[in-house]
Image 1 (tube, rainbow, N blue to C red):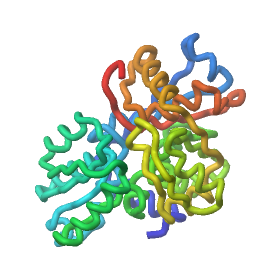
Image 2 (tube, rainbow, N blue to C red; image 1 turned 180 degrees about the vertical axis):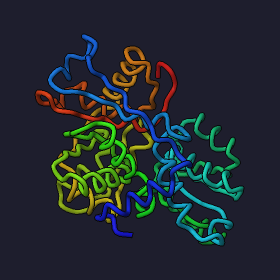
Image 3 (tube, one colour; image 1 turned 90 degrees about the vertical axis):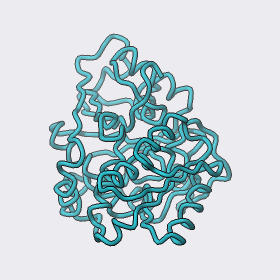
Length: 316
């Protein structure tokens, strides 16, 4: 699968059409007075919190499933996840009535564990980080002969996430900048690769937690860095290491990475609920936090789309 060709992403969009939602754009123009931090530009939100299973992850999982042979599908799926990817894989497995096994780090919120079990997934909470949970998932997939679905380093998963970029270009005419939260890098790699195929001048800005600067440190050092530890409550943005396929796309396609604190993400999530009525998880508030803190300050008339990547509880 070639992630530098627009056909890859258009094929993915066609493949998952009818399986996932074409999510809406929320236009924050004109802005409430409290939003003077973004008064220079036009701000839009891409509401992937309204996606199937509550996050963008359903796109990648659906695209991956639909590229597998019947035999591989029927064997069932194994994955490791901070929560959202696991939900997407469990949903995909349930849709074709095959088993799924999901390994989660100990930081995973209890409500996501409950949601996973509601899809019929077998759930194991193991390890302090995603990386530790993932080692167990790989061992299990091999021993049971099941298909392992990587949350961010699989070309079909990346292509599925990239369909968001295609939709944004259709929905916001002459978009200048897209801001995307970074975990392992599957979402931003997909969006960046798809968008740059169409218009290389569109800026792609990544956002990571200060306590999990996986790609920030890797790009700064010019190679993939494994973080010695993770210190953030944003569990879906907290792998200790990215993978080569993601690093290569991100290194060549994105313009900047911004770091935000957990407190800044919490404040952004609260403002999104109180002022706009959008309920998001901590990770999904990262892109808005970058705007609220003015670490990304739009220029006059700049059209900026912040991807809101996952649902949360009202009021956070």
